Amino acid sequence: MMLSLEHPIGERFFGLRLDTLIRLRWLAISGQTLAIVVVHWLLGFSLPLGACLAVVALSAWLNLALRLRNPGARRLSDIEAAWLLAYDILQLGALLFLTGGLANPFAFLFLAPVLISATALSPRTTILLGMLAAACAALVGLWQMPLPWSADDLGAGPVLPPVYLAAIWVALAIAIAFIGVHAWRVAEETRELSEALAATELVLAREQHLSALDGMAAAAAHELGTPLATITLVAKELARALPAGSPMADDIRLLGEQAQRCRAILRTLTSLEAGDAPFDRMPLSHILEDVVAPHRNFGIVIEVTLPARGIDEPVIARNPGLLYGLGNIVENAVDFAAGRVNIVANWNHADVTVTITDDGPGFPPELIDSIGAPYVTSRGRNRWRRDAVEAGEDSSEGLGLGVFIAKTLLERSGAEIAFANRTAPAHGASVTVRWPRARVDISGDPAGGPEGRPAAPRG
Figure 1 (tube, rainbow, N blue to C red):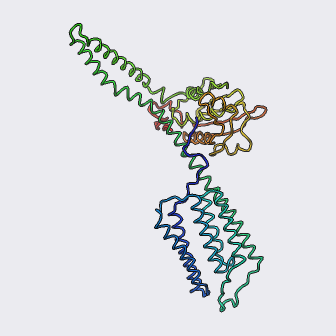
Figure 2: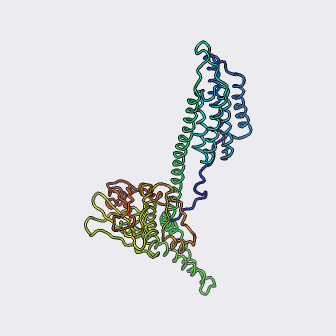
Figure 3: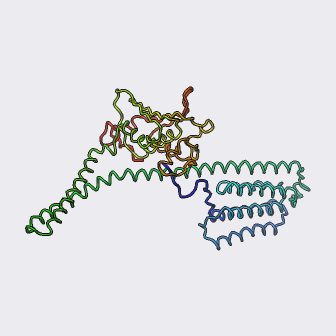
């Protein structure tokens, strides 16, 4: 149950859209212009108005140039986006230099470019932009043009002590680091989950294609029956119409024999389809044997234990998602087992439970709370046997998606999954899959699910 992706895992930084950065910069330009106008004309601060507006106009000119030279839908590379965000940091530093440095309350806008980078660009780029923002904040803290406070209100204006300005810089640096790391972690988890779910859909689509072959065979049996019957009838009529000793008699007889052979094959397919039992409805014991069979030839003893006769065995819809999920858990158990895997099935009127245990080393303590999350992986000690038999490839460096996909597909079927290590003195891992019986047992309704509900959808 190997998974192949066209793009390697880890290359999940596909760049920002240029249009996104252009729109954000227009928003910044509007806010900066409004702040300059309000502070200069409404609050009465005598700013270096020409220099401030020139810095803002430079950003507007850059935006226009980018819009005219590039399509808005273009995605920027990591380096291109980094340069544009670095410009935003430098432009903000220039404005703060002209308007009081760290004494200006807008100094915390240094966070914005770092936050954008953390959500969309690589960690290295985010770290470099964070360092640039911290450096610019330090520079404008040391060298700046003081704000010309209104003499009517504050005389010469307040003079902030150097210790306070240093504290502002420390607070700003900590905020850049903390918020940047937090935003990157949240965005990274979202990217991982999105990519893992896409991989799950690919696996499920493959399983559904395989399952659909059953229906295609049945359809072929029905659709080809009529033309083959016509061919057989025409062959018989031609055979009767030919004169004795005709050189075409053998060809006509061969045509009739081959048509009969095709009809026999289609009858076999039709008989397999009858009742749909081999394809769509199977007792739980048959489902488990279907899951276990591909893993019996790797030197590991696999024992399936069923309860003593009592309550009727549940009949389950044989959908690809359920088969893949159980199969992946059994495969992992075989990979890690020292010599034995036990599969114990139990059911009652309320629940259906399947517990899969092995005698291997068990789940690593540091990973047990993360099992089922995307990209959590560990190497199976017996993986080499499967590789040697199946493909001759080294798959020890897995993607960490197998258990996530299995868990997702089983939960779609209504299951609850618990991962644990076996209690000492036993050793090994234990995975318990439990369904409410009403969700999976279709034995009471030949046409669908129990109590008239439709059977569980494929996948």
